[in-house]
Amino acid sequence: MGSKLRIGIIGGGIGGVALTGCLLQRGFEVRLFERAQGFGEVGAGIQMTPNAVKVMKALGLLDKMLEAGFLPHALVGRNWRTARENFRTPLIDVCPVLYDAPFIHIHRADLHAILASLVSDAVPSFNVNCVGVRHEKNTAVAMFADGTEYEADVIVGADGVRSIVRSELFGAEDPRFTGHMCYRAVVPVGGVVDFVSPDTSFWLGPNGHIVTYYVRGGQAVNIVAVAETRTWVEESWNVASSKSEMLAQFQNWHRNIQTLFDRVEDVYKWGLFDRDPMTSWSKGRVTLLGDAAHPMLPFLSQGAAMAIEDAYVLAAALDGHGRDVASAFRDYEAERLPRTSRVQLEARERGRTYHLPSAFAQAKRDFTYWVRGLFNPQTSGIRANWVYEYDARKFRPNVADKSSRLVA
Image 1 (cartoon, rainbow, N blue to C red):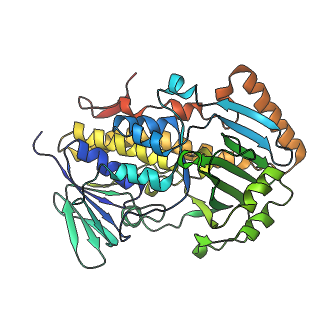
Image 2: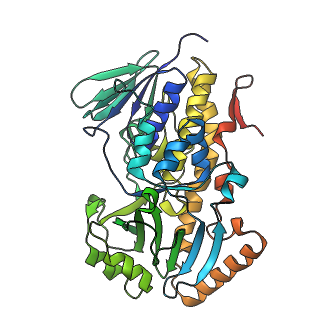
Image 3: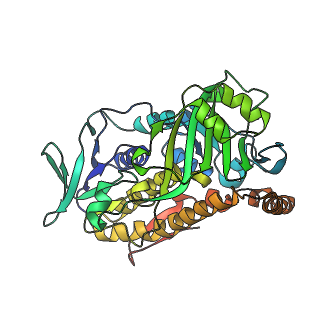
């Protein structure tokens, strides 16, 4: 097999740090390049569904997640005005039995810090901005704005929805604005309160929905409030907002929503962008991971989860094929492209079903939720049991025929 590959990773978000940790555990030489000045507290809450928690478990990080996170009792769908339950999918007792992993709410900064605990101080380089990649005879080279370069056996673009690496490989193409904008806030509450149930609550309304859930051991509530708009300006895709602006978008929603929103201090908003699924992520010795490969809407809570799965599978593929990068990339894409493509498209469809404009259409949808719940609560509501069942730990690169499969 020869010596381990040298790998450069562009982007130090959750996907890039997850890949770095996975590769370091397998003995690779890795360098991580991040344009920010350091790893810091960014973002808001995140739902770590069982499929992603399985990878964290394999990396030895589950206990840290449980210390920092919160275990929701159920996924609950609620009527935007009355709070009537339209579906209830049990989680806290069921997920470890069905999926071999819990469902965990956690602050994105806490998750990032847990993953970064796998990365020694010598691995990341900060305040470096990748401006391109190129191929030499048997290597790939990342080029940076300060004139420096990094030559490696493999370069991985984990640099987000506006990926420079993706543009270099496949040409510049702006992500598509979806007509949705998202408000996010984290509200300190000091423990579980009576106006926010200890669940992942989906409040489904006309032309919008709100998701609430606890993070930081129940000490805070994360709010994700999605509204439809035709006036979003792409250049302002991540800006500060205000409580009054958010309240104006969700007037007349249930009093529990109003009580929670009244406690909001800092609010951020951004437009939601996605892309159509790709047919390939790799060229030569360069490939993509996470949002750079498959940006998706947050309606199945799978953006970070897909990146974490990618990281585990890519590391396993590279490890299994020694210095045969082409075969490793074929295995990686064969395993991941069908799954991430389906998640992208299903998340897009949830954006439609969550926002039905008429009371009749909502009632028809909610009746379907109720019927499905009678037979199997895991297939009702957001219908994500097929997402949670997947287990990246079972992936094996099939060296014999250069194809990949998920072993039973």
